[in-house]
Each structure stands twice: as structure tokens, then as C-alpha cells.
Length: 465
Image (cartoon, rainbow, N blue to C red; front, side):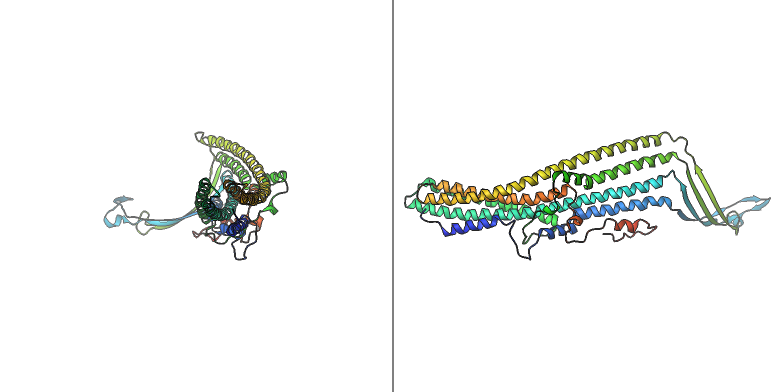
């Protein structure tokens, strides 16, 4: 090789710039990772479906509160009645015995005591709402993490594709120079074939990188809701990562929504035991009724009746089904407590795993940067040695491939560094809009319940979205 080719030097410099795409500055108009997360928070279908599920669960509180309220009904009836015979010895027949009985009435029934079943059902519904809120927070964290991962995948796959394309350009130039040297007898046909083979492999890598980028773009669109355009570099979420592994575990066991949801499930199971036990208690209610009747027995007669009746029902034995329900509810309490213990172990293991991944990715970034620098020096040295005949074409190709692999590994390490920081924050239960202060209005999970808790009637859903 007579002299270093200017096009090859330019391609190498461009490849080096692409390798730093995840950490350099960007135009102000570019989409940032924070704005992409905000888009996902507002428009992600899975997250919005979880919000709708919470609003539906809110209605259970009002539905069970109906047990405190009176039931009222209006009834009316009308008919035709023919009477033939005698009344007090007087014969009645024909139209004189025809009546049109009818009337209307109002009945009001009020529960007085149902063995505290309504109280416990309402409390269970409220605990279920709290557990569903934690489930919504879990879905929010999953959505934000998936969005961050999709964002970084597009960035890293774009940078990798640019590296592969520039590698093709460098290898094309390498092949051209090898053929020129072959034509003047400086190298053999073997050198040309090696350059051709390496170029074919590089083109194959470009196709694979293009396919990977298309897949990442599709996932980006699925999670965030828009096509990726100009993306700014992603930055780690280090300011929200706990200072130590022990601190992360303490925070996670205290704040993670999966654990809190399990604890609310234990509360619900315990309240269901009390609901089942309420079937053994006396039941008391009062019923008031007012009726207006016409033509009850004779044409033209009418009257108003009013009554207030109190009833007490004391269960003695109902076949044993209520006892089985109580035992079943108690077993469900034990199962819920075991699930809560299992969730604690799961979250703790997740925190340890994600913490280890983050520490490893930090070390990989440092090692990959050193590897890239060393391979750049090695490639320059191999090129100089090949120029004076001390290195073969294959040595140059191998050095170029090692540098490319190191740069791709650096991109992957930089991507993992960012994603793993988000993963740790998610594992401790803090990857939420409120905690990370994303530029978006947080969804209020309390607003809808406050709107429907005391609604006595109405079929229109409040705008608690």
C-alpha cells in the first residue's frame, strides 16, 4: 500500500464520531428521551387501558355502598274482573258484577343490619382500589422503561448501521487498492479474494443492521406512539439511582408497587372472611309501603293503605354452605400472605440483578473505550507496516474488523449503561412520572373515585381521565 487513502481516513473519522452518538450534544429541535417518555405516558394504549381498569374498579366502592341506601320501587297494575253470584242474598250478574281493579303503590326498603357485610364489602372494595392503583403504577413503570429501552435501541441500532455502512466504504477502497497492487504484482490473488470475502461479509452485516433498526423503529412506534425522527442522545438516570445496593433493597421492599399491591390483596382477603362471617349474624330491615286501590271488590270502591313493617331474620342452619365459605376465605388469606412473601423475594432478586447489570455496564463502557483506542492505534500501525511489506492484506483486514467490533461493542455498552440505570430505578419502584419529574401532567388516580364515591344516580361516566 503506497500511501494512506484520504477516503479511508475520512471514513474512519466518521465511524469514530458515530461511535460516540450516544453521548455527544445534539440540536435543540431533536426528540429527547424525556419527551419520548412523556409521549408514552400520555398515549400508550396499555397504560390507558390500565387507567380505564382503575376507573371501573372505583365503581365497586359506590356499588357496595348501595347496601347503606334505601331501595324504592313504584308498582302499578290494572285488570278486568267479572263476578257472578250473590252478596248478602242479593243476586249480582251481568255488568253489575264487572269491575276494573287496579292501583299503584310505592315501596321503600331500608337495610338496618346485615351482619356488617356492607361495611366490610365497602372496605374490601376500597382496598381493591388501592391495590389496583399500585397495579397502575406498575404498568406506568413498565411503560416508561419499555419506552426508554425502545428509544435507546433506535439510537444504538442507527449508530451500528452507520458503522457498518462506513465499514463497507472502507473495505471497498481496500479492495480497490488490493486489486491495483495485484495488477502490478505486489500481492497475490489470495489477497484479492480475502478483501472480496471481507467486503461481502460487511455488506451482509449492513443488511442485518438495517433489519434490526426497522424492528426497533416498529417497537418505538408501538410504545411511544410516533415514528422516531431526530433523536437526541440518551442519558443515564443516575440521579435517581440509590447510593448503594443495600439502600436500593430497602427502598424497593418499602415502595415497590408489586409488594404494596400484594399487601392490599391480603387486606381484601381478610375482609372477605368478615363478609362470609356476616352470613351467620341476624339480618334486620324495615319496609314501608303506600298503595292506592280502585274497584277492589265492587265498582266505584277505592282506598289507600299504608304500612311500615320491620323484619328480623336470625339464621340457624343453612345447610353448612356459609361455614364452607368462611373456611375458604381463611385459606385465601393464607395464600395472599404467601404471595406477598413471594413478591418480596422476587423484587429483592430483581434489584440485585439490575444493580449488578448497571455496575457491569459501567465497567464495559470504560473497557470498550480503551479497546477502541487501542484498536485505532493497532490499525494505524498495521497499515504503516503493510505499506513497507511487513504486514499482509489479511492483517489489515483483521485489524479493521477488530476496530469495527470494538466500536459496535462500545455503542452496545453505552446503550446498556443508560437502559440499566432505568432498570434499577424501575426495580426499586421509582420509575414514575411524579418521582422523575417528567415534563407531563401526572394522571390523578384519586380524582375519579372522588367523583363517583357518593353518586346516588346517573349513568354518565365522569371525566376522571
